[in-house]
Each structure stands twice: as C-alpha cells, then as structure tokens.
Image (cartoon, rainbow, N blue to C red; front, side, top):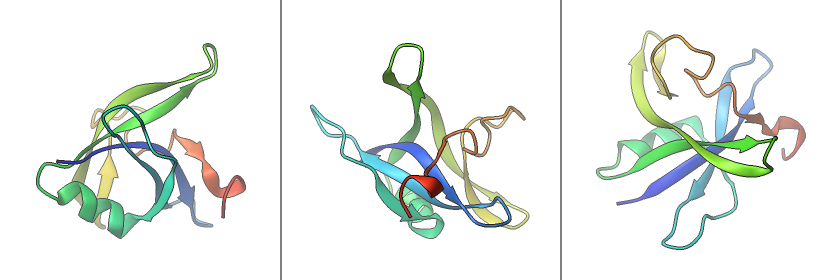
Length: 104
C-alpha cells in the first residue's frame, strides 16, 4: 500500500495538466516532489492499495496542509485525476502550485 501527496502541477500551452508533483509518504517523512506524467500518475493511483491526497501550502501559517482525496475518473476525454467532484475550484487539481516556472 502506497500513500502519496500531490503538491503541484505542470500545464501545457492550453492550460491542461500534463504532469503532477508526487510525494511519497513514509512512516516519519514525506519525500521531495517527483514529477510524474499524467499517465504515470493514473497508473500509480490505479494500483491496488495506493491512495493520494492534495498537499496544499498554507501561506498564513507557513506549512503544508493535507487537502482532499484524489481519485482517477474516466471522463469524456479519457482518464484524469480529480479531487472533489462537486464543481468547486479544486475539482481537477488546477488550484495546486504551478510548477512550470519553478522546475521544468
């Protein structure tokens, strides 16, 4: 069983998420971000026993906060990751840190 946090995304020129910043949660630690393609992220979360939540930076208190559960859904254009399926801004992880300008 693997537990992951997703802290950010990379988007293409059409503002579509192409990659995710994945962190592996250990017993007493969380790894640095590893860039995972959309296909790899979906495969990881479709693995039996693997789960992920968003990991959101709290600017007011200067620390990471565990957010919403992330799931794989099959939409009209294929599979993608979604957090909270209730039409809020956080639905498709687009609210996470945009890593495009931090790390290529």
